[in-house]
Every structure is written in C-alpha cells, then in structure tokens.
Image (cartoon, rainbow, N blue to C red):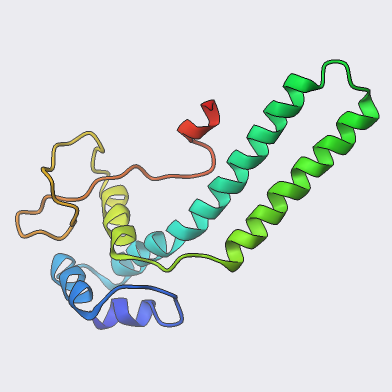
Length: 152
C-alpha cells in the first residue's frame, strides 16, 4: 500500500483509502517494480484518452476534407489541412489541461492489460478487478492507433 501511495504522490487521483486497501491486497507479493509498472500503466490512461480523442478528431476532419475536397484547389486543401491540425492540437492541449483524475478503474484496466487477460472472458457483473475470487474487470488496452470510432 505504501509503495502505490508513494507512486501516486503528486498524481491527481480519486482512489479512496479503502480502494487503496483493495489494490494493496490484490497485489500482495508483487515486487516494487511490478507495482511501478502497474501504476505507470494506470496513470497513463487519462493521457491516452486525451491523445485518442485528438487523433480521432483529426482523422474525422481529414475524412470530411477528403469527401468535400474533390473540386477544391490545392491551396484551399493545404489551408484546410492546417486548420484540421490546429483544431486537433487545440483539442489535445485543452484535454491535457483538463485531464481527469486516475481512478481505481484505471488500475483494473492496467491489471487486465498487464496480465494479458482476454477481454472476451466471462466475468459476471462485477466491475472490480480486486474481488476475492480473482475475477477481473476486463478492458482492452486503448491507444490512438486502434479505435472503433475511426470507422464513423
């Protein structure tokens, strides 16, 4: 518990003391470096979400530009591309300023990813990765390269 608490120092999080106790119990026996890797993965979740939103915004803008750009001149296309890039960059910077706090759910997802647990596994209705029967909340590791939103 002390290791994770130390790793979360200066990190905006909403993990309560009782949730920290759950996390400590679930990771009992893990090495300090394992806990550091797990914490790093969990702390990156809000940042990845921000990056993903900006990447999806940029992709959607480019798709709109391509659909409507058949008869536009090259100079207009270049300006539209710069506007798309500026819009995505602004969204990214605003997202970084307004990052959400790290949650216990981020740690649950990090455990799933880190342990390589299949997202398709059955785990009942629980949303906690730290149940005593070792059933975990499962979620894919998300990044800016893979998104179902890209197909919209």
